[in-house]
Length: 289
Image 1 (cartoon, rainbow, N blue to C red):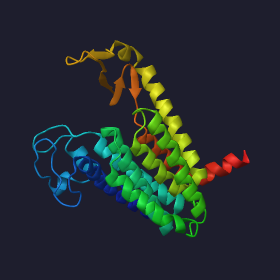
Image 2 (spheres, helix red, strand yellow; image 1 turned 90 degrees about the vertical axis):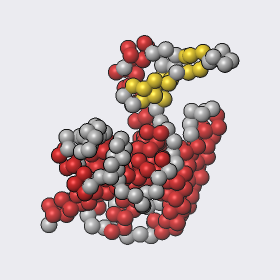
Image 3 (cartoon, rainbow, N blue to C red; image 1 turned 45 degrees about the horizontal axis):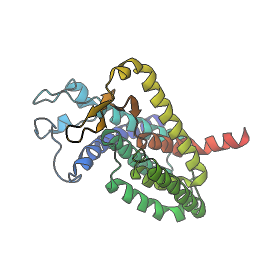
């Protein structure tokens, strides 16, 4: 029976991942997420059922559109596989606890959507952050009372609101003093994280997010240091002869004046998902060590 559930939830996950691919493509473009058939982004041909089977269609079509032969990004099947593995992990960690399942799917869904959109566009859309924050506010009085058996973080109402207020204030301050280095979207997402995790678990999530962000930036600098040094730093505007920074792309990362401009959203999302799934064990280990 365990094997059956494992296969079932993995398949459910890759199908949900396919839906998230649609969300993360349409939301930044302002397209309706509920209406309209999926289509090739190059030739605009409406895709048929056989073109939309998660992972399989990509492999069967050899990573190309059936109609115009344009290459399909490898990230589409990768996200489907990622969500499938996360659904499988939820089952292995939490079994069939309905409350843990519904909350975990919600948390994973919004964080994957935020991470992918922020990575691609460098902004976190209000159409995702505001509904997520409202749902989190509605959930906060009930999280500590749900029969979750200590499987996931269960902050009290006070812990949740302290977490939301404190971390929003910190990120809002950073937004003001960073002169564009920190986006307001990050502050809103910090509010969401604080509400869902509470101040203790949110600290773990922000630590993981910040640490992985710095580690990733340093890795990019080390691996591509020679190429980065060869990039020009500034151009002179023809209008007022003002020096303007040049933005270059390396491995999908913006390089501005020789430094990687890494968006924080995906790493905050990573920190939250890890903390949501393993935060109870992490905090217990931390307190006992």
